[in-house]
Length: 166
Image (tube, helix red, strand yellow):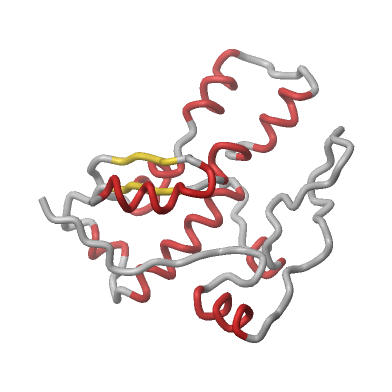
């Protein structure tokens, strides 16, 4: 079995492409100092939830989570860098090992808000929430088949995913 990692990408507060992020680091652009007010909670402190450029957040489709928006953006960039299309991948059995720290926390924020308010309406809402997998969603988005796994080991997720894929 061959494992090929042909390219990579990243989304963070310094940009939405590796080139933009690298330029901002090199030019000593500081991370935005504001904390988003996109989500309200009962926590005493504000946290940098989804602190990424607004230009990216405006591209979110109605039926996708913010986590999947980030994954979709990175995969589309990686495919472009590798000079591949979604159709090119469909000729092969493609396994997806995805490292993310986002999936574990906010894979379905609407459900999480309902849960915190004790307003979960059914058992199946809970099953959907805990079984949501970014790698499975990506597999469907790309229309490919093969093994898939979402690795959520916090900051080491991406490195662990590369090790597992190897």
